[in-house]
Image (cartoon, rainbow, N blue to C red):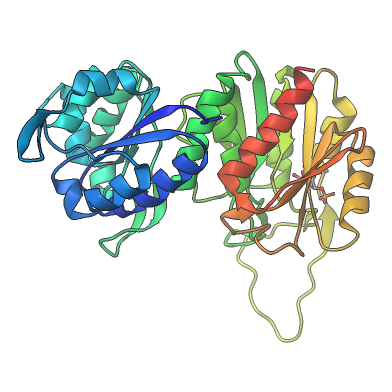
Length: 401
Ligand code: C5P
């Protein structure tokens, strides 16, 4: 999708600048032409020579350049017009604030102000800076100008702290640009319901039975559906994640029964439903009012079945395109196909726990997409963001068919 596109990469002075070497390589590999403009401070983190070698274009730092002993002028207007897309990554708090206010004290900012193309920015900063009200205001302001934010991710930061502020991975940035270029907004006007995360089934006021689902796959699906234009209702079990897109309404629930109730409140009105949640099949038969005290000997807990939310959506299905997940450990394809038919689905996504890089907790996944005619399409191990794009492509090709 990026083949033949001119991409202008603006690099500012943060430690994540070293990752732009990978970003340039990925963009070039995808067939794009890349030019780099960077701030002086960025050149302390990654050398212009490295980026010039990778991008096969001179890297631009200043309005004037010394070439062969003579001075030449780097034309920011020309650069701004050359680009089909501009990406500022990493985007520091300082540069973002200047962009929000129209400050123009270096070549990168002048080029940004001259750019007529869509501009993406991928912030990178420490977690407290990322959370600061002035930073949040900057993000809002830049988005209100039509710039597209590629949110930072959570993880270990250069400071040693742990939290939100890490620049999105180069693969994620490339995936965002690709989705933007590829289809525009194929889900515009569509309503999408997504379930995500685990459910917690209470035993007593302080204990529950749960599972290891982190919710990542469901959240990535929600974000991409929103990015592709859909209005998304995300029904989420307990996770540490937050969906930040304005088209996503998140409804937090705890138990399978609560998820069932919320899902059925919305199911009738949606065009697509994807059940990515790891719903507990059983819950304790009784929930003790008081903390269960330890006693001599063993403790047995009697369990009752939870409703199968996906199956009941399958029973009620009318216009909706209904997609489930199957996490299998044996006879994967056969089990997944059986589930698709039993639950009256339009498609099922198989993750096999036997595949390295697939399943719970990992940032990557390996899937097979099976449609109701039992056509099977298998994919390589990819990041969950990329998997989400693949899944939406498959769904979109079927709902628009
Ligand atoms: O039958 P199994 O639990 O393996 O099916 C998995 C699929 O069904 C997933 O899409 C999951 O979100 C959904 N499911 C559900 N309600 C349940 C159990 C599973 O929606 N109680």
